[in-house]
Image (cartoon, rainbow, N blue to C red; front, side, top):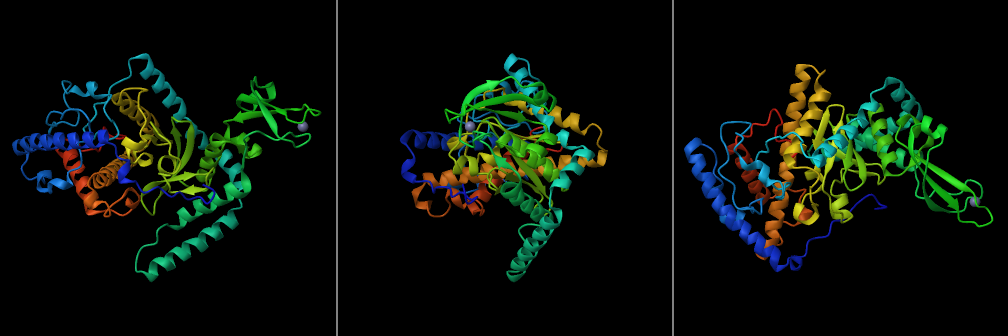
Amino acid sequence: MADGRHHPQAPNPENFDAGELTNAFEQLMRNKRFNQLQEQSRVQSRTQSPSPAAMSPSLYPPHPSRAPPPPPPPTASQYPSPQMPQQQQVSQSPLLRSLPIVPAPPQDPASLKFRNLLHVLSVTPTKYENPGLLDEALSHIPLDRLYSEAEEESQIMQAQAASVGGKPEWGYQDCVIRALLRWFKRSFFQFVNNPPCSRCFMPTIAQGMTPPSPDETARGATRVELYRCSEATCGNHERFPRYSDVWQLLQTRKGRAGEWANCFSMLCRAVGGRVRWVWNAEDHVWTEVYSEHQRRWVHVDACEEAWDQPRLYTEGWGRKISYCVAFSIDGATDVTRRYVRSPTRHGKSRSRAPEEVLVWVIHEIRKKRRENVSKTDQRRLMKEDEREERELRAYTASALAAELNNLFPRNSNSGRLDDQKTPTSRQDAAMEWLDTRQRSSGHSGPDGSQDGR
Ligand SMILES: [Zn+2]
């Protein structure tokens, strides 16, 4: 990842095993049955909706669930009646499912534990909302330099766009964050694995954890790693306090992904960006910044100097991911689908709580963060949630379409996984299919009740 790019492997059709093919065809059959059911329910409710049956059969994405077809979706209520068998669907590929989820409060110990964790995590970005802190942060940033770099990059993008008669890819504010990212990674923050010996500068060997000293505690370290110098005649011990306090990080300027993401997210806030701190259950964290220019949240990983490469972790590093939850001062969002485009390849079991509980907790955090926000802003945020939900759903549609292409070799050169930045007619069809299902299932979205799924 040294060049900050990743090159997803083109999927090899030979990699599909017979079991996967069988599953896919079973899904196609279920899908056909599902569409018949859906068609019946639509005829009963509103005949003007576009019918997925109008698509050619080869364009059908597989049914997102590996289970038998669900009953015809409800058409009237945002919150379907309690007899909907939602609670029983917990174990089915939740990332692929687009049926509405009825939020349910946590009850079992595991769900309560997950809820507590999410609430604790959600506090992280609220710590950035401190004028004294942001002023202090700004005093560390070479603003003039970053602004002129951003200006230059922005002008280049405008010129490039003008030469082909299009719109520049990124706006000036995006370029400011890009300049901040370069400076942060190259000049400001240091990555620490084993800290070198401060006495003789030789490498050190990990010795495990040690209790924080009173001074370290006072400065916000709850965990301290201990290292011993590898030079036998030295024997010096090095302490590595893990600070989660952003004030402290401005001083120490070092750490691993946790410190990097925390400090960088705060600095994005300091230069005026809208920022999210993204927690991943597989022990990584990163940042998302809102691009007003593109009207969407953009993935930024300070450790990797990665900008807008959400598929880095799965397709780049080959990781399997269960949950990615983004926290901001405006609430929380399950953004897993942005990072896991193909749940069948890169999804990991989401077993911390039923999906209904996760949705419930996300709503709870949003409500809490937005309670002192004006009605106008609440509506704006809700619109944003809806737009993001459509974006996330489009990724699922795109992945479904790509996987279908791989199942039918005659189409194999028309749309592979690495072509997904360019919409194909197949992707559009899959998207339309998901939209249709969502509409016909009564999803109107404004209250975000299905967000994050
Ligand atoms: Zn030493």
